[in-house]
Figure (tube, rainbow, N blue to C red):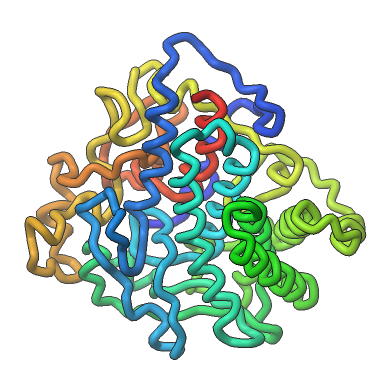
Length: 397
């Protein structure tokens, strides 16, 4: 269920305003092993991979999936990430996660040590896919694969998907300035990550980012209006598209130093004040990235780590299809669309597969946590939650 926890799960992004850019992060008593947490927060992304998995895959209960993605549009759209516990590829939150991972790597890559290569690999898994989405068909930006309404009626492994892998796109006649602006931001930020490590790839990312940003600037409109039920109520653009134009322009300005983007940012007149930062609303993020990790890793009233696989006490029944169902290795037969509900979704048994590093939606306002996979607003992990914590963990590690 990706039905939007939206701002509920952005609890982690809205906890105390602490400055990511300058490293002003408060450390409280009971310091966890931040180096371990950093490693696992990046490893989590392997559990969300779509496409043909590499030999270096460490989360081995996952297998190849979505190998025909894009076929309905006669393009190759394999790869990328499933956003949360579902089997749909929503580019809006995926691009945001990519931007956040890139930002973390740019700011704190020097503190990541051996994890720097893993962070780059996590970014590249997304950008390889986003490049396909942006370059396969002139005049179109592909923004998602998989019918979310059909997918959310099923509880099956990504390896077994038998629902329609519908393909969604925006274009000049059906614009999506928000998803295009976020995609441009992701590609521009990633271009700086690979500037020295892979100059040729970096140039490709930046060139594509410029083209996508031009599309976002020229054809104004919210992708929710263009795509309707294909993205709503899952990842509607509730805040409009102006914040993504600001966000994308800010990243292109940083990547190019081109006054074109500075003038564009000024023309937006973006002075909106907000205390929200999420996959949808970027105003605060365009000014400063804030987060807090003392609480998430176990320094809380329940003494529970909200990162799966970290510490002795962590969520065991997360809302995640692949984690909650036996792997292909132990159960080669397909469960079908609804075969997994009775035996695995509604059971009180712990998930058979540990999605190491996944950060769930979190506790309620009273610090309570029921560890119930049916309570998706609290028990579902998502790429955009993990992406935001990598930088602070690198700093603390």
